[in-house]
Length: 381
Image (tube, rainbow, N blue to C red; front, top):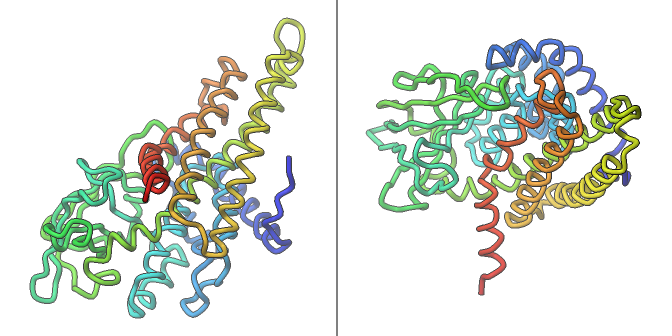
């Protein structure tokens, strides 16, 4: 494997701390959390105490002011340990940055302390029952009535939906204006008219709470508008490259971890009187996967470097998301096959990884949408 040159010694010290924390506080409980459909809320406050939530938040708001490599490390270690439950990535890489990058000073002062401590868990409500990757088609409305916005609509597939204390709701403040009529509004849990639906039962990511959200005449003060009215679509487009890079980072960690486990498995598992690793078919399969993972690792790490320099454009992020998640599906499928029947058993990490990987090609914008983004840029005059 080509050595990674992205990380400094302090990053690796942080990685070691994250891994030890997760091994102690999350791994022993994850099977139960899968049955519960969500992690123990206490994990969030413990992670907050360790500085593992939203490490990029500036020191002015109580954060550590670190670079995005620290976020990447948290995501990588969660995936490598098979921990699909904690929605730290959604919170740290998506929810909190929307507030830091677009929020008012009052909003940052109000919400950041809790976001860092784990007492406030964020979610972003984009997807609706009839609207997936087409964000311009959202139907949820926010109508200004005096000093309040009145929100009506529903959302679905919302990560951190059950635990969420603060939801960034994608609304139409001007339904006639298309993309220019979209705004982002902060809604706190417990606001009258805001209800959380059932915790959705999914194929994978079984320990991660994912919910429907309902808004019926929800009144919030106009001060809860995030940024400027009508600029919501622009804000979404600005944040999506980081979100899609996060998906790619998770895909890489998953592939590398499962390949490593599969190599160990085929050395031990015997068939026809010899280890499976002795068969040429096994060697060829693993060699091909390892080579493809190595090439993809170089590309995704380069995208992370670009992001650190604020040079990761939407098209390159779309390429990273599409290519890495397509490869993730292929790698884990091949590795499961090499496990034989045991690969289909839930107790084996490869089975969990197989189920968890499927959503990667759907959320963050489907891979078909990624192709549209790339194609439009390629064919633009």
